[in-house]
Length: 166
Image (cartoon, rainbow, N blue to C red):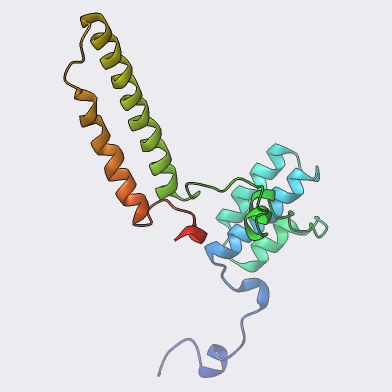
């Protein structure tokens, strides 16, 4: 490396801890700490916003340390009640979840409500038309059962079911 500006000695020098670059995961952890501090009243919303912007603009651990230097250690937020309840054993009297809380469960829940409502409206209309004609007419509402059958097959296959029921 003739005529170069650096030498091997310079390359092997350790980088100070405050100059090490940070990842998005580290930035997110500091943002979560700031959110907990804001939730406890240590920061107002505008100061929280300024600090979060500084966190995401920061490149090194030193940049992140400056943002949190005046804050005490803020403990992690307690685990949400829904997570604790799902981890605990369900008592026999507690109602069982039919659909999971995942995207598939939410989609199945919405589609079951929509198709069930369509079926109910069609049965009511068919009943009214049959009653006013004083005879039973062709039960067209049976065709609205098909989407519910498809949803049932998907549910049996495991789509949208809670993990413990699969």
